[in-house]
Image 1 (cartoon, rainbow, N blue to C red):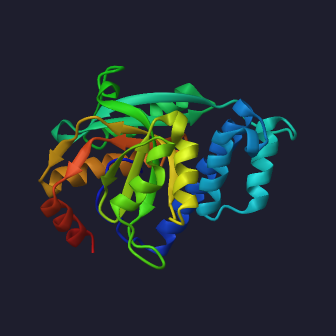
Image 2 (image 1 turned 180 degrees about the vertical axis):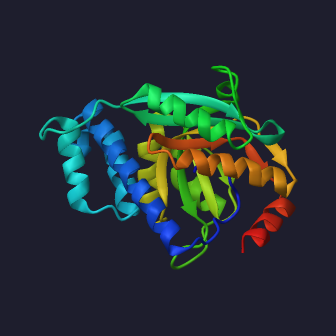
Length: 258
């Protein structure tokens, strides 16, 4: 999940982790195929593919799987599906906005799975544009504050990447979110890397232009229940929300999950 949590993810049982890991691998492979189809199979000339491969490697997707996905997407090997991106919009408890990004080869299946995941868990589907107008597409480089040799400060990131197009740095709890125009993402990521700063991910995301503060743990649980159900769908690539948990609610939520 992306863009809706400032609290550390809770530990789950190994079987659940393995199941989610399998789904994550499939989604990362799908992202590589699409990037290769749209911009060619050479990462050096296709920044979107380079970032998709980087993300997959950081999640320990085997190199063979990555190579085959590039070949399928670029047409060098048969078997690639014709995926398209579809956005759905919904509301969770307390009016929290949800943007659901699907990558699918079957529109009807995706629409059905998204609707069931939202409505069966207490959410409602929203009109096109009603939620999305509260978000903007930005490049986001996620940087862990605690690194192997030191703790990285906001000033370090600003100094490293301001000239590359960095616009703002947001405090996300255990990480910094370095945000920029989508066209500058590759340069900002490279500038951060060149400064010796490790990063977790570099992606184009939907960032909320205003957030919905939530201080009720039960409301937060209901929203996350919808998100979990959505992420169980193979067609759902990303779920973004404007949920902003207060520190007290975040602490209470973590305590309830232990």
